[in-house]
Length: 350
Image 1 (tube, rainbow, N blue to C red):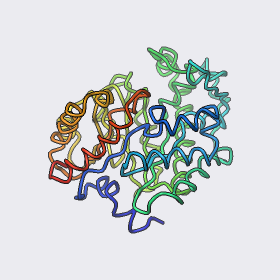
Image 2 (spheres, helix red, strand yellow):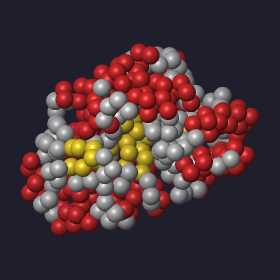
Image 3 (tube, one colour):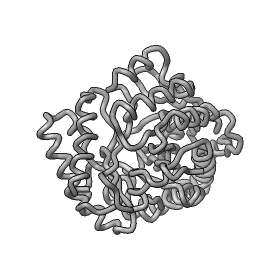
Image 4 (cartoon, one colour):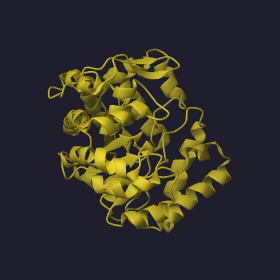
């Protein structure tokens, strides 16, 4: 049950497009390698061990929220461990990133992908949520998250990251029945996973479609939109969903159609134009270029002000980067960003 403090906090009010005292802000990847406190923990364990240790995942989540002074914490986890109970063998290889050792190489491989109903194997995530929620300030929401079906499918098929998603697209184009079967398994599992995060103590969730920007609008509508929509439709209606996709502004109207109370914008779109095209009956999140955090403070402040100005003081803007914080980012600049957003928002630019 959500408390009155959480129900009326800045983030939740903005997600409902209600007036706020200043613009809420949080940062994607706010617990990450740019932060010495994170690296002190990370130096003792592998990345996957950090994800699977509820005490450590809670520690880095809480430390980042407090250090930055942001208006929401986001669960420290990763998109891909949910693929493990589905039958895929995941490793984070040093210098290579995530690797799937048994990728789906032919459409018939969909038969070895499990539609997961029992999420006990993901209990480390839900335990971390409970620990974080216990120690967060009562007016700071906790955001859960998961990978959208297309992004998870592309990892499962490509075996890792990809430049052109050739294998994934060829599967989509050549065997629609197998593609839909895979996407339905991913969608149902992801919906259960996000609902379990909410039950454990998250107040909102973000759905990341990190790779769907490689698609044309026609392909997104045919092969992806119904499955992303099915995930969002399965979540509780009173829990804000941030629907976030990167790299292709042409897909934003379809992202809106897929659902979510908040549409996440990356930095390759003008916020003012995007919001006008999406419609003002949806909230937006974003969208400062993460590289801006490397600039001198006067330049950073001007770039922040440009984003705030594009929002035109309209209720429903949640400030964020257009993607995650980069590893070499100066921590003091991230702290300054939060302070600048709060200052500008309080003076009427929210």
